[in-house]
Amino acid sequence: MESIREASQRIAKISAHLQPPNSQTEESCVLKRADCRAKRGAPGFKVAILGAAGGIGQPLAMLMKMNPLVSVLHLYDVVNTPGVTADIGHMDTGAVVRGFLGQPQLENALTGMDLVIIPAGVPRKPGMTRDDLFNINAGIVRTLCEGIAKCCRNAIVNLISNPVNSTVPIAAEVFKKAGTYDPKRLLGVTMLDVVRANTFVAEVLGLHPKEVDVPVVGGHAGVTILPLLSQVKPPSSFTPEETEYLTKRIQDGGTEVVQAKAGAGSATLSMAYAAVKFADACLRGLRGDAGVVECAFVASEVTELPFFATKVRLGRRGAEEVYQLGPLNEYERVGLERAKKELAESIQKGVSFIRK
Ligand SMILES: NC(=O)c1ccc[n+]([C@@H]2O[C@H](COP(=O)([O-])OP(=O)(O)OC[C@H]3O[C@@H](n4cnc5c(N)ncnc54)[C@H](O)[C@@H]3O)[C@@H](O)[C@H]2O)c1
Ligand SMILES: O=C(O)C[C@H](O)C(=O)O
Image (tube, rainbow, N blue to C red; front, top):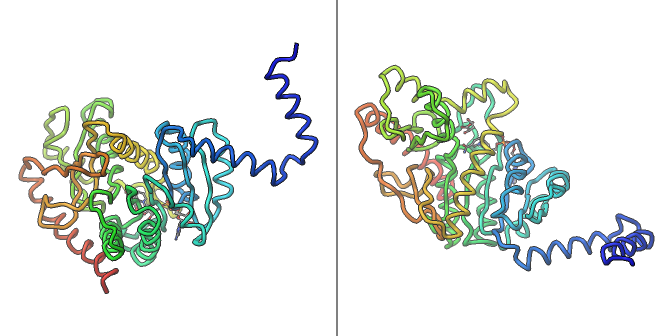
């Protein structure tokens, strides 16, 4: 006797003859089912990536499609999202993937999102500082954040676009202007500094990187990146030469990649890894998991500056607790003063861009 499965295969074969395989009817039917699956609420969060066709965006989209906490994944860019969406959409993991192309589709990309990750904007070439990206990326971040304020005001925002030390204040000003600012929900992504610090410190200590935890505070550019080697876990001591070598290597990690890529951009793969590690922590926080703690560049009262990167506890409302710096040694105290001086200017530059 014919089983239900065989019968449905036979019916599917007949229908395939009745309708051309790429007909709109069939396509919209499949999309409707995906929508139903999304609406039925396969447990999980709705995540948008803005800049999803870029060097970071593509591997980030792939890794987020693999994340079981994600039920819907929106991929937005001003170019190439149809191809990236078709490609990623074939992965047999749970998240429903939808692509959005160009400014007219930005609002649809953002509506209903729980988490928005922003790697949109131009990357550095050798000889440039992150601040050299300000003129182009400031405007891009402003436009995208205006969309967030309008369409998903309660979403957690993970801002990757450089210069992070200025783009986070820009985003905050946009949200203030729109009356939607919640400092807990805006997080500048500094996770790559932590990932690098863990890697380089593990090398020096002869440990597996997973065993190492290095807090990196301050900001995300040159001397504003301040690894706290005195607080490394497991507790470790470093010679002055090791401290100098590690601090410089962590601060210059981005430039090391920019130079090695020789004009072909900056870190993309390690950044996608770091972005997913951070986004996953945000989603676990949103889910209500206890004890989710990561470093991020957030609104802060830890120093006299309005924004600063430290460890934060991630919860249902974003960065629910911002941790103090803890005890610093003399080397770190000097580094902190230098970091604050540069950070103050970068923050002010971002604020003035919107308030001008
Ligand atoms: N925070 C960090 O640790 C970190 C690490 C690496 C790179 N970055 C920064 O991330 C950004 C992206 O780097 P990348 O290597 O992916 O660059 P990329 O040029 O490969 O990709 C950027 C993408 O952004 C898109 N884009 C441009 N304008 C847009 C807009 N208005 N709306 C939506 N998308 C838009 C582009 O089309 C492109 O696909 C750069 O600013 C880079 O400096 C930050
Ligand atoms: O260095 C860059 O320009 C990209 C990024 O900020 C990084 O740290 O790799």
